[in-house]
Image (tube, rainbow, N blue to C red):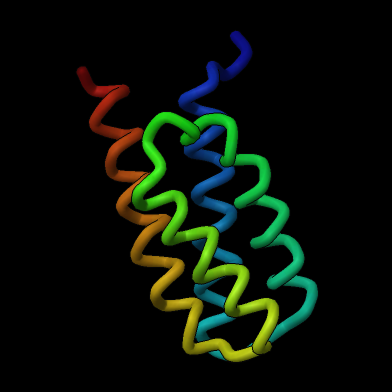
Amino acid sequence: MAPGPYERVLETLEDLDARLAGLEVGYNEVNATAAQEHVDQLGQFFENDPDDFVALQEAVDRLVETEDSTHAATAKEHADALKDRVEAHIEE
């Protein structure tokens, strides 16, 4: 059985989380670009629930623009909040 939209979003969030964890250690353009692409992919799914998503998007944009890995921790917090929300929805 093919994964549904929630499972695909969780996979994207898990990969994003791994990229952000790597970026917390130090800036890496490959991980930063991948993180930005994942955030772009998540945009449609979270368009009706924008608070944490917008904060995630802004933190990743700052991370890429400044090449400052300190923004990765903030982005990771928002990604984790989104992940928790999706997991709670699946459990309902």
